[in-house]
Image (tube, rainbow, N blue to C red; front, top):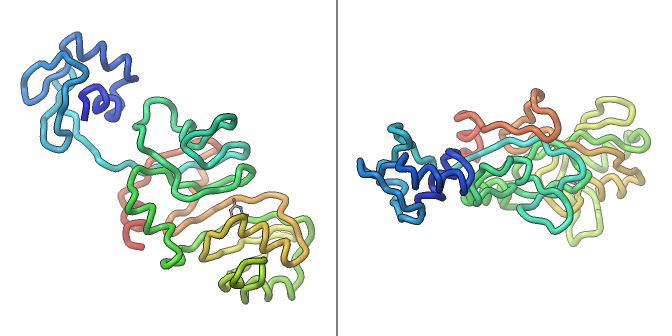
Length: 232
Ligand code: URA
């Protein structure tokens, strides 16, 4: 990896800032000052110090984001703001969202650069649980609840897998599903002649949305949270 990229990933500064720090002689690699920002280093083996302090390389990063409405679950977009841009510009370049929430959906989104973990959380084989707080246009009937819980036809080849429905308020339910089909929650509600007015994901796999995070805010996962995702 290039030295300037490594320093950016270690959040020492922007690409242009770290180039200045390197040229000024503030960076050593295995005890020797390296003033060329393009110098190649072995990030897992070389000892890189910035102003005398050793930088511990961390291969993977994991963030819980409270996705606001109006932001797309993508790394790049020509017109809309992306969830990755909410992390700010001092982040590493290889971070991506684990799965997608619709532009108008809010709530828990995991961002990482760990492709294996993302695959484990998204593979249809694992049936990883996702819980949504769903505000609907009118109250669900008992029959609607039973149909959603049993699994129903939403226009795909197969009906949905059994879900869990917990009534919270007249027009608000917690819906737990084990699949991630396109617009799944909205289509499930349409199948019972209802409509989603607001959608928020509150849990995903072992993760529960941190109530302390306002829409648009994020935090690093704790070691326990990372373990619980890895254990899936
Ligand atoms: N189901 C939907 O319809 N939309 C989402 O964003 C997530 C699940």
